[in-house]
Length: 299
Image (cartoon, rainbow, N blue to C red; front, side):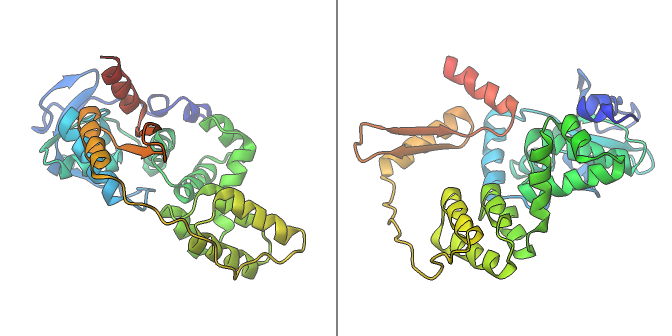
């Protein structure tokens, strides 16, 4: 396999493989997609993803119940056990199970070894933005080690600048506690980069705690890191004034639910002080989801 195969996506890395005709699991086949019994698919033993948000899974399961699976998962076939092993799409598989479906659409690929399986898994997840910043960093590191490429070459393969690759990899220099906060979405990648600017581990930890307790924005965290860099002592012990969030009116919550059911995705309505103005946020979790939302709005 050449290095350039990485950047051309899954089909360039390993071509589609037709599902074996002797298995009873697939029931239909179209454009390389077959239906497989969920119970015949076992987890990917190289899965890089560590955390699956229960709320996101529930929301995706609701979307699948309403509109079906937007994109098939990727599996390989084990001729010895006559079963399938997941390559990419565990979040979609779990949500499909949660939705109560007995079958799921899959694309079958046949990686020749664990190295190829790992590449498929990582690239699929990286392209879909399904990983948190720490998982992405670990994925970059594994790809560089497995395929013997440097940061510049990896950047070309995954469509990122060398500086973006470097900034993401540097997150692995953070303490375990901070990495966990990044993994679980307690702080953002921007917060992590701000903390990396603080060399002293004790001060870095103190600012990290301040970010959590005070719910500091990335800009505020950067300003605090700049104070440390300039030799100043930031006000780490001063409590930050908290804005008390008002409960969302019942009519807005009901409208959010109605829109979520109609569009098949998460919807957030934010009203301003003037109730005649506000913002509607539509979430999408893949390009297919985005296209489906656009098509619904066009009708």
